[in-house]
Picture 1 (cartoon, one colour):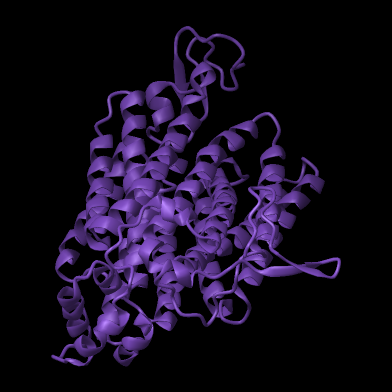
Picture 2 (cartoon, rainbow, N blue to C red; picture 1 turned 135 degrees about the vertical axis):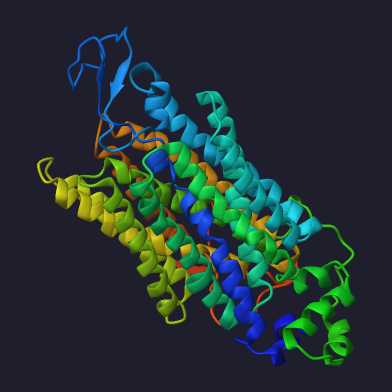
Length: 496
């Protein structure tokens, strides 16, 4: 059977059509970049004291009967000062953050199935609107409960839109352009959005107006419906050949029949089958990739968001810390793009995660009276996990076949949200043991690094379309006997 990339190779890598798609979809990820971490400023806890004591540094173990007074030196208002989320109510802060990631978990799970059933394009635009409208409604919140529920819906829209744009762009581009799009386009768009957040927050000190400023740009992307087509790969899988041909005609900008004549060679024998999440467990190969992916994505997301959301707890200016964190991401995305074809995929993932894990565990050796060194090691560690976070989107897009790609990435992204849900509580534990979150993050990073070496290398490989084209996990040698990579700590899997 001919390969889709081979059949459409005459379109080239960086024509006008491809560049337009890359630019539009990359810019569209900017709202996802700041929406995921805007909680750093919206939910930060200002300096405060009990109204009756009129003294800063009030002992939180005592009961404050007359309410709290919050400093306005840094913020005019946050949800903490709005609803007195301190002392006995302090647990509500990490809970509302975790609920955002609960929404992201739900979105990751259902959007993958909807995207594979109804198309990448409708899901991409619907979730963009959902993220934008929900943020505006959240501005009107009259209680913490209302804010938290809407936080969940905003999380659902944010991750669903991010993954849909990733898959939509990847399936319309050649291998070379695909890697460039994911790392220099999609990931950089996310990084620039992240970098804009501290700038917005510095000039807009109230949480409600900050959300308004974050939501409004979303409306600018709605007219892109007329410019961004549906994925031709997905159309072919659904047997909609004429629509796929139309997309290719637009890409070439002239009428042609070459594509239509050869299209039957990539009409797969499984085209009439409807795929479900159970197909991710149907064969040995796809099952192994899915299981490994779940563990790796949980670990990477927990560490990445843990270090990103910890900006407010680091020593120094919160706005500068957040910007440095975002700048690190941007530099890392470019560096990853430069390195991605110079080393096997599993080796690159192993190296980045191991580097992060070591840096975070070294923090345990830093004395308490050296907060600057503590901060430097945390930011250096973030270099590794930021590289891994953007790289796994490239890697697992290449590992998952077209027929279940969005569902496969959806399951991985769902697993990632489990890690993200956990991280606010790990950071909250830092109030009692400052080093404990870093030990957990470092250990998880090293474990994920070890597991990543079982994944097959996809460098210079064609994008798989069918389940039967899924690669098997890597082999290793134990006591002179070659065995399949072991998943015994998850479930015993043996290749035939």
